[in-house]
Image 1 (spheres, rainbow, N blue to C red):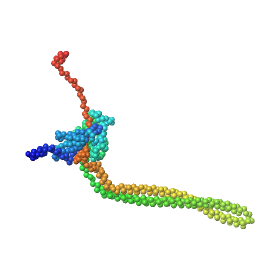
Image 2 (image 1 turned 30 degrees about the vertical axis):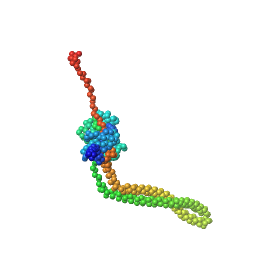
Image 3 (image 1 turned 180 degrees about the horizontal axis):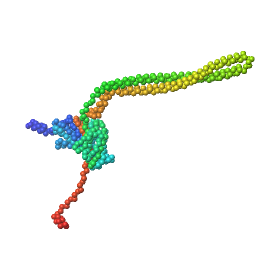
Length: 468
């Protein structure tokens, strides 16, 4: 009996034990769709996040986010919200829940201004407006935003205007499409960029839907261009630059030698100049002495002639001898005149030579200075070609790097998708942002209230019948 009772009690205990909760499945891939409400000026007002999961079997899920409220969008089962943790039991298939938050920092800061006829106005003052409307939008990276979403997401800004109420629409850099009676204006911001947009239009009885700004990861399939076709041209370019550098260095060396030679020529000519000047001065002194000699000889000849002429006939023999002396002195005077004339000519020419040599020295100095300047120029040219050679030595790899960088500006580069709501969320497959501003509502004219009709009694109607 004791054994039977013991077995019975054990059986009851086994069947009465609570069924253990299902294990939390942390390998389920999720998606986050973040819907943010913005004021008409672009300021953040609040957001709700639709989190979606695809489950092959019923599972218990733990998700994280800074939510004030969590709402089950798939079943009627309540969700457990404990701090930043959302705990839920989800059936197989697609499961959705919504998390509301007012404490979210978006990856972008958005500013929107409205100008009517050049004057800035609030959006709530534009209902039914008429005139020239300008909508200015600025999109900047938010330094407080999480992760690197701003550097890897494409941001599309869409403004929808009524084609009948808005005419002469101008939007530089935007794509404008027709959608029924509306004009859909779309600006696209590439990953990592910042946007400044403006839409201008003539408006009448103005109203407008909210501006929508959506951000998604880049998914463009862009084929990287093949740069090998430029390899031969780039190789020839680098060889030509190397030859140019070699030629510039040889030119620099030659001009330096020429500059040294010109300097030596100038120095030698300057050393020779004092000797030439001394010769000129000596000839000038000799010329002065020749003039004195000529003048003294003429005085002597004049005196001999006077003495000869004054002798009496009795001294005819002496007179004849003096006459011969006079004639001899005349012949000597002719030679002396030729000598002094030659000395004078040589002196004059030596003065011209000295002056010309001085000019030649000045020219040699100018030549030396010019060649020195040329040498400086060829030196700088050689330095420039050497820098050009160094700068283009890696041009092939630089071209590839530039192409990669250009492609990265379109594709956003490598990016591992992560959760925006919490770093604790793993295996996130997709995150997108949909941000919508307040619109400008249509003016609704209030009809005057009708006076409430007074209910007439039988006696009131009877008195009205008789005009009483």
